[in-house]
Image (cartoon, rainbow, N blue to C red; front, top):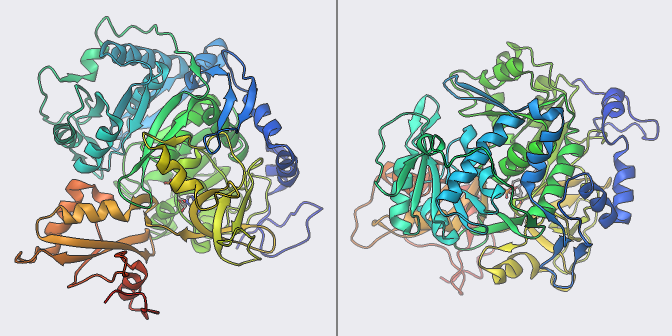
Amino acid sequence: MPRKSTPPASTSENPDFYYPSRDVVRKAHVKDWEKLRKKALDDPLAFWEERAKELDWYKPWTKVLEDSKAPFYEWFVGGKTNVILNALDRHMRDARKNKLALIWEGENGDQVTMSYYRLRQEVNKFANVLKSMGVRKGDRVTIYMGRIPELIIAMLATVKIGAVHSVVYGGFSTEALAERIEDARSRVLVTCDGAWLRGKTVNLKEIANEAVGRSGYVEHVITVQRTGQDVEMVTGRDYWYHDLMALPIASPKCETEQMDAEDPMFILYTSGTTGRPKGVLHTHGGYQVHISATLKYVFDMKDEDRWWCAADPGWITGHSYIVYGPLILGATSFMYEGGPDYPYPDRWWKMVEEYGITIMYTAPTAIRGLMRFGESWPERHDISSLRLLGTVGEPINPEAWRWYHRVIGRGECPIMDTWWQTETGGHMITPLPSAPLKPGSGTKPFPGVDMDVVRDDGSSCGPNEEGRLVIKNPWPGMLRTVYGDPDRYIEQYWSFFKEQGWYMTGDSAKKDEDGYFWIIGRLDDVIKVAGYRLGTAEVESALVSHPAVSEAAVIGVPDEVKGNVIHAFCILTAGAGKPGEDALKKHVRSEMGPIAVPAHIEFVDSLPKTRSGKIMRRVLRARAMGEDEGDLSTLAD
Ligand code: WTA
């Protein structure tokens, strides 16, 4: 096992650690991780204010943090800005103007490259198109697309004019999309005809049409042509993107709307403990400070880097680290449309070589999936351009970490295991390149962030004792509320440790004797399937919307590649014939999307419930895994 054995002089030799090479440390933005952490924790507001000063503002703030209405915190109060001012406009005044902002490769080999100047032109044009459709400051625009450059253009254009985007991941299906359109009350939907995935096209426009029919808010649908497949266009409602962009109204001149630091910027729906997905709301001022600071320090972004975040823009990782973070830093970002193993399992490594990617950020499930194909696939390519690696979304098992480190990172690239959430906006627990690493641990909180693992009474857990992961102080990228439901914001995140005023993450974790954090998993009804966040309630409601299913309960069971897969228990409707397992899976796929399809479906006569009617998932989990069901004294019957 190649292991960098050049610890900084101050650190004693410890076989648990992987130390960064002197070269990595010498070149890093932050050379002494612990020193910066200590300094920032002594005065977090000063730390964040310094980061905010690295950005452009139309008008500076008068107060860094307003906490008198906590947990409705406000950051950079009185400041005027717009994320687009920093992501595009400010780059026009120097050489970045002609630098590549985006390199894109389609699954079928199509390529697009865009300089900052060109990207800004396209964004301005589409911003004018949106305005001509009546979109105004504060209006919500829903975006449902594959991973293509126009997705980024649509997001940026929306934010530029002060509107609020709600991007719905292209892997979601009809009901999931309809529900999100409805909650956001979007009058405009931007979509595409189809998307390429593993050599086939997914018919996004058809799903969009059905969802628009179900939700009843959308007045205009703008469709980007990607696959060229036949789609149904409704006269008076539907327009082609390329037609609109060719009209005189699509002028490349457009003023960026000056926003209050606390004005809404986007909503992103995510699964929570109960019921419908929550619209997590982020704002202009704090969000841009948080994501640009974390991207710069954690991934050590330099002007000459080629950055690849292999997530989807439809999730928070894509929002923060494909779209906004890299653009604010003026970086060159790579985005790829399709499947990682298409047409062969070396597709990713081929592109790393071809584009000279220097920093790569992906999810454990992708690493485990590619690891299964063996080392010969990455070995076919010269991927020595890589200097730093990252992972996000779920705990990474040490075996996958070591493979990633040794085979992809040549034993030389530090791995940044970043823990965070849709709600946190950006990284919260993460190493910086100068930190000693332990495979499977995200190390410690980012500078300025105070976190702990605590017991239910709020006392700190001892070393290696499992407890609740909490965030003890506010941070600029924090969600501001649940869209349209402030009570749920308080209830979900701030009620458990109300007295202490801590944010409850919903994760369980441990801290070891070195103070390193180890994430165990979710404590609530959220399941992480291949890194995707799903709520049990959503999957269950997709199952019971099938006429033959009267009740359903789903749980996550461990899976070697995906982390977890869904195991569903269903009760048949009286008198209904038993549907085939495949028919039921197909139904879930068309309601929720492929990521929500259960791996196993089991028909049962009853579900274990407490006397108050709550499903005992613990009992189901034991049953699915063939384990002892434990204490059943609270079971209703
Ligand atoms: C999990 C993704 C372990 C965690 C950015 C969290 C992780 C949830 C890690 C949020 C990690 C994320 N190690 N677990 N490095 N990163 N998680 O909102 O359970 O899709 O609460 O945000 O993913 O998922 P979300």
